[in-house]
Image 1 (cartoon, helix red, strand yellow):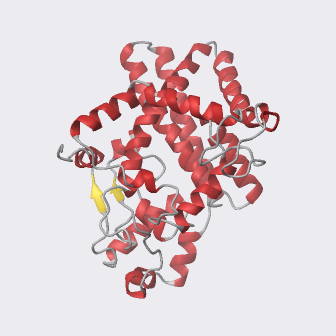
Image 2 (cartoon, rainbow, N blue to C red):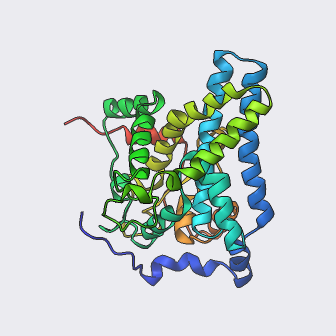
Length: 329
């Protein structure tokens, strides 16, 4: 791919002029209570999922719980993403502590290495230096290929591959885009003495706390739902999110056509797109707008007819079908 430019013509950024200074300040304002509410809601849905299986253990409740938990695990990744932009909490220390201990560590992630990687994606979006370029150019594929990918997600094969790769990274055996150890220079292999427990302690501690809470309620076995979701439904919804955000763009050099907003229905927000992650176009237009204001930003831009030609679509099922519409060679 030839390197695209991220320097947009002034005419392409006309949408910036539709906001009054007061509206812009309001959209950019971080709200601690709103962030606490969303984190609490995510953990609340996880708790309800555990409770549902505890009171009525059967295949149906287990499937529902794993679906709900997998989406909330994506929700925690979204909250980690907010922290990476310093928009989760006003206080930067609290922002990073909550972003890691309440959101990232429980899902085997880490805010600090993610931040540099992700901000580079914003700065170099759709250029040869974009670290997510390989994710944005994977689709469309054939229907047969999509079926195989979705099956590998829901059967846990992708989750198992991801777990092995992350564990190898954390033990110093590999370098990835989001290496965890801050002592490793990008592209170099770490000494095992600098990794191991230090890289895994947040993940281990938070997951042991979750297990201990369930054990205190007399049901430690429910922790298996958390693990099962991470290996299966979390992989599935993460793939669907990835497909919808940048794949199959219009003009990659046009900021209104190289990222996509999905108008999510209520059940899609519950099962696929938590915490306003569906407003990805608006997020790329102004990346420091907190997640809870993205829908308001979208509404203002639509009302003032400033999103003509933008990638705005409805329906994740339809999006996956389009991503699977490539004709076999």
